[in-house]
Image (cartoon, rainbow, N blue to C red; front, side, top):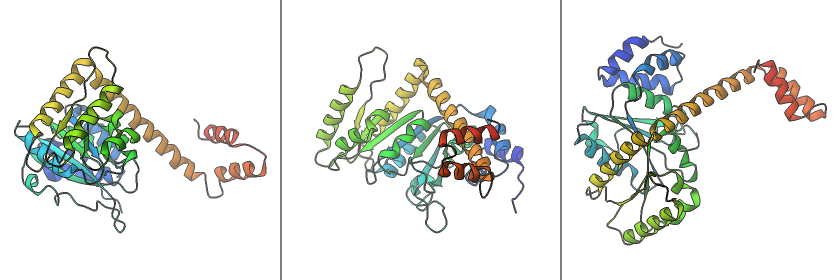
Length: 320
């Protein structure tokens, strides 16, 4: 039985800074509760103030350690910081496998920090299907910065660029990351690059190679964002202040160039499109199991129709 929820009260409590209410709202989002449309409508007037920072990179480059160091740097600027850590799904419960605070114990007790894990639940692209709505909850709750740390699954990580205002790409020396970044298309999505574990051999050459590859791919048009490559060590804090400054500089460039609104409009467009497709799929599912969809499929198999014609008939039947 679905529990009823008082959406206006929960939204009011979340905006007042009650962590329990924020957590409850994100749970409603993650569970795709029937009250989700009402919730999104209630949050809409209060969104748009947070800087969404995506953080991605291959497994083992130190994403969680860097996130923790970045939290401290942003808190030193008196920012309220939220973290969405998208974890691999538990094969048993479907929930987040690694948990909220195992990797970020130092920041978890800070009342100005909210950390939440979301299970990817098999969704490709490094994110959870609930991520955009969860970001909206945290934005409306008044957080200044929202860090979205992705699963770290390689080439499909490019999805993070569509969900964030600023995308950080982490790499590490000795892992062949420079070449892998070029092959996987990571160079195209990053706004700021971080070579973590700077005390390792090869850090300087990794930084040099990255800067060279980025320069080759960048044009010379005035006013373009020049993507920095920062050498850092999240464990001892080296380069973290420089990273925080680069993030602030990028936000300033986004606002002054008009790119911030463009990115957010594209994000909203993608979110709307995804919802429309999901609803169409749900309605198509109602037509299966002996219904119109199965009948159309049988006609295609028998040669009485073709997939394109059948698709048009199905859309017409759905009123699209």
